[in-house]
Length: 357
Image (cartoon, rainbow, N blue to C red; front, side):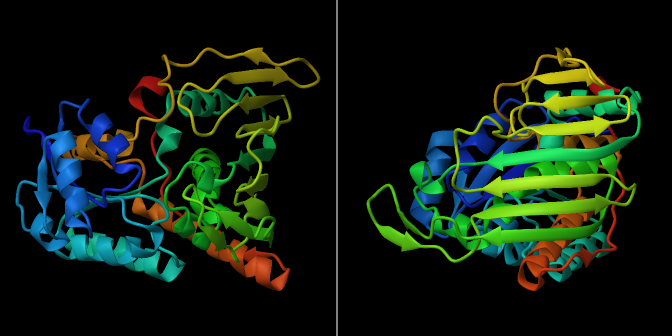
């Protein structure tokens, strides 16, 4: 078993790259080697801030033998091409979500990684958080009984209020950008989906960036999606890029024959978790260990690196991410046709974190 740190390279030095870099620095088994961006000056500024190397191109980064894992933080539309290029030179890859913009492309990436003997991982990895793992542990005990319905809320506000370049997020749509978070948590815990129905609408078409530049959106910024899982559980997922201060902000509720479990946020690792026996009030459930405020952005990469060192499966897999894309593609088809869409893809269930078993 090697004790040398796993070398990491970042592609795409945009808004989230700094959070990844800062968290990667907290893991002894990871080392941020360098970064590349379509704008070399941005890569240089990033490298200066995070004490790593700036590469003039993606090709230059991929030529560095000290980089084992590439983190793909490019825009949604570039994920497939960049990940393909990395896998072709036998680099392990952790990609931001979605894995690709079609299920066919996602499947090709999974197959390419398998052919080349490298790991493929993808966000969302937030099911690895302390609150999310606590929720899963409670469900595994059977405390809720047979879970028949799950409610999930994503009121994510208006991207232009905080992000300097909001257009790519609106182009892919709310379901593809943030609906993936509760979808990944729910399917990691309860298994794959088999049927999807979705309704989408553009609520607020004409928007203005922080710099005062008007822009127009055509992809739904609101979606109401229903899923039936392979085990029969029904999911209702509400997502929007409009509401921010809802009382039903960003939680997930699991309802079973014996009781209900509420996680107040699918995003924050220190979210509150509450349990209520059927017909009784909710009471707090202590987290399996103290949760991190917000998100530990390097946790999915750190788990992949540990998996390489320990020769075990990593948890946030390409197969799971491809299944999520299958759900998203089915939802898009359903929005267009008005009919439910059946899907058949599946994935191997991830293992719980060692400290949550």
